[in-house]
Image 1 (cartoon, rainbow, N blue to C red):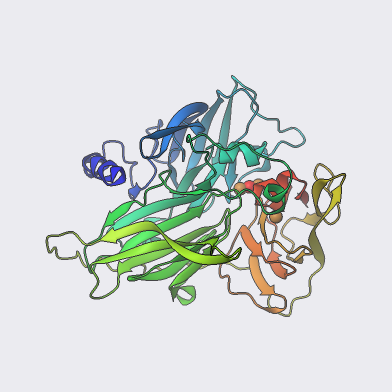
Image 2 (image 1 turned 135 degrees about the vertical axis):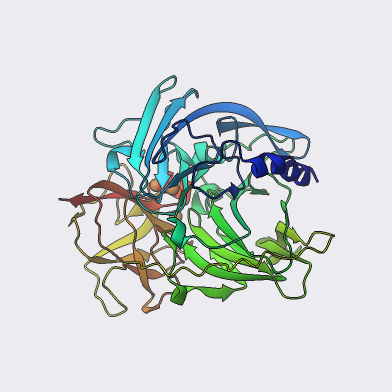
Length: 468
Ligand code: C2O
Ligand code: CU
């Protein structure tokens, strides 16, 4: 119930929009951070990492690591092409960085400690500065000891708005950050383990969170109105399987922003890998006065097996008074998306294998046989079209993530892949091979890794150099 009050309490401020950024639509969800620069094409933010108790469960506080005392951290926003300046201060007692997941920005601003890029030490401030290159829904998180720091609460979202003509005509734009966390009975974060199942499968939480709350947020939606929903999976390891009973949902974009009309499709289920984003156009199904976004989770069936259970993620309700919808058109733009020039038959010229072994009882996870900080020497020419295979030699799934570039997903075990558009993250199932293509147009040293953070920390990280 508290969730409901929190949303209502936000409304007057949103209507008056005292510091709503100029020319940017309002996004409801995590609290938006005020832009400190009055110029139209510059956004300037102050972000601070610090410990803070946060109420995840009703009436219980959890000692978290936060950005600006919030988890998820505040929503950052820019218009595409804006200069973004983020003054980041580390008030934790260990080094950290901020990585801008999915944004194709210069390598020196990517938050990965390598070469001349160092971590932000306790007490220090670092200013991240880049041009917001593309519109879309992105997120930010540390790239130092991420399995620990992200689980502790350090993650936030970043929306880069499309030019006016490409924006969907919707009654509301909302962002939902989907996460899970493992809490002990007293509400504290369960100790991390660096061996056993938590490393093998990644750390699964026992509490599902939507925008940092264990209670499903409630959305009031007038029948006949239409909304844009942005979903982000920030869990350490949990692939989110979502369903939409009594809602009419059209998938209109993903990691790389909104799609041409041709690619959009009506869905009743969505699999959102760790790190990935989805863009949805959402309506109440005709004749319905309520609907839900539900999360499919596996629970014990009492006989030593597992069965599916559906947990409420977002509750949509029609207001009690009958209101006329505004008649918004929804998503009608048809952007041109330049895809790598490759198809199902394109041969791969490189391959990356996810593997692993045990050494003295310790699980070591590898990419092409090497465990971070060792990694293979892989370089590509800037602008080169590269088709490569990501092969999983293990049973458990791995969300493959590439920094600084986007790729298209061509096939899964030789069959046409269901994933559309440009992506930075793709799920590779047990013993599966996913073929992808990228034009590698962003120069520098870039990470490629499994986004199950425990896997990454156990060695499943590598780099690719894009040379000019
Ligand atoms: Cu979201 Cu290398 O990370
Ligand atoms: Cu993995």
